[in-house]
Image 1: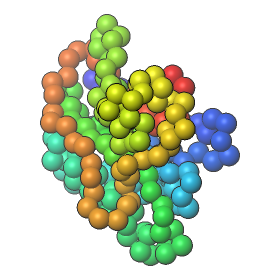
Image 2: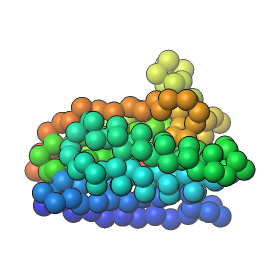
Image 3: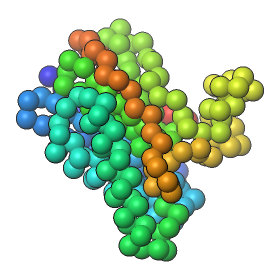
Length: 197
């Protein structure tokens, strides 16, 4: 049995630009999506909402726990945001991060763009981060210039190297499916969560 819980809050900000959603398909396959609109860009909140809606719609057309489905969900989200940018030129800079998970309870596949993250928790409570941020601080960690703990307070922590809604081809990271074990859980979250936990 797959159970889902959600929480969203603006925290100390004036506007919550996060969007989230999940769908259950016949046959026990489900998907979850979290998107975080880029706060400095006009239309970030709308970009996040469009991303979630488009990804969920794409999943409904092909509900399977596969990397192909994850990629199709992210590509559908990219297309929807680009279409809205073309329709409303004043929102030309709107962007969002995204993290997607699909599972049938036997296997799970995921993908992401930006710095929204996916964590996996074993039945014993051990946490494993499954995504690597597409951000300047993550690049600095990868080069050994700062530690992972220093990412949260780094001056460039909001500077992303990739986001959904940008010009050109979508550059998303998509993982191959992995087995899901009894008692495991997954956490999809935006930087508004992981920066403080």
